[in-house]
Length: 182
Image (cartoon, rainbow, N blue to C red; front, side, top):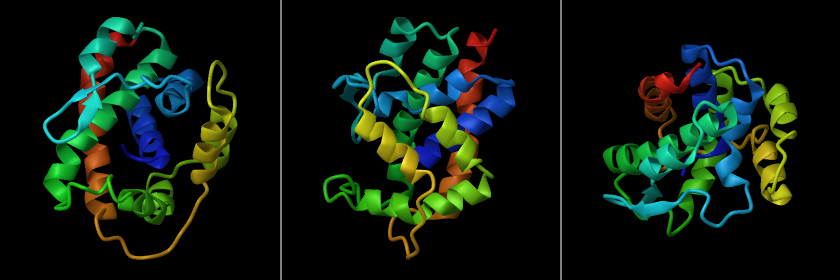
């Protein structure tokens, strides 16, 4: 699964493309990773990894609700990252087993924030207002990661190809969800 900055980049790009001006949409883009629900992604076997069952969520969620539409957007990014980006761009498909991908997220985080001009303070304020049955520790960690900056060389993630992926997948997700926008 991609990191919070990736989810916020996609949330920003999709909201711009579809003219969604609703903080609930942003909150929904983080919600699957912070809710107290062990089945928040309703995972099923994919081609390479266990992926979110987006068809299940199409039926379960009220996609006219911006919070739930954001939740669905998060799941779509997870699915495409696992099914398309990793197999097409990373040779070592065991990057989750050795947890090396998580350090890579730390190394590209600040670059994504800068490249896509994410307003970290605004996002932190918005996301800090997520309510409901959430894991407050996970929420706090995710919010803190938005401002995290670490230097070093990546082995798996190339920030340029990953940025291109985020731009392209945002367009694709926009096409998939535009029917649910009021």
